[in-house]
Length: 438
Image (cartoon, rainbow, N blue to C red; front, side, top):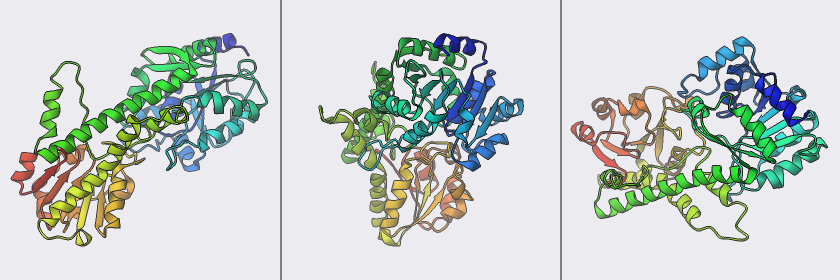
């Protein structure tokens, strides 16, 4: 099958689509293509996840507008099915790869999941198939890893017997479907004809610009955009620390800075989490360090990684003023997901905070309305605590009954790592209130 043949199948929606990896990216992607009439099969190694999906139940438990209903609909229509077997991909025309690409403790990507997918996919991949990596990867990964490994495992030649491209996802938890439909994509193909075919595919579900490029450009754009965010957040965090040191208010400073034309000072906070921002800056620089030693990006990463520990230090100092040793303290941490109104705990700043406090002997009580292990009555969890630390801007915490919380605490310390709580309300309720950057 040629790319022209595949384009025709895409246009009449007879092309069979597979999605490998049914997590925060792959599941909504599969649902979207199924929604517009394609027959879609999803493959995932987690049996429980596959079983839930086939029953029309989303394994994603955070607030994802529209996803539960969409999944139920496409399953009922028979346009989507999930499997654990790669053999089920042998007749698929298009295969999208949506697996995690973490970095190790030395900040290097090993691509264990991606390598595994390519080895398993190659032997069953049909001739003429188009393989698209949607996972975020370091520049040169398509050229140096994906292409040779897939050629080796399949015994087929790229651009002759199969086709290959890279179209990095641009979604975030809480807005998965909205982002898929409305955010532009960089469509990188091994050839311009491949990129054109990919655009024909994505225009079925993306109502935004689809910019044709080569693979290296697509890899660079995705990693650079998240490194940009990380650097700007680090700047905001450093300004917050300066404000604390000199007696300023970072929230007022940010408001007034952003009144100046072309200024966009980001929000400071208690740390940066998720699967993307803590990782993608390292991916951007992963393959350049022999020729150039980056300075700004590693420094920004260090600033942002330090913020949960700074929140711990604020808490320690607050309790010390009333003669409470940290190793005798009982502290409630509100929020364990990395993002508001989500159940996603990947690279959670709260995990860093909790681990550090526990290493100091603190009894830590965790509450999160979206994370199953930490759900429950927030006031019972806060009972007899010496301090409460707000780490996530969940809607539930914005509406918190502060007077009721005050009554169950042993000491009225409230440390706000996200500027969630209104300061006047906290003080009026009796709290000793500390907010980051002030």
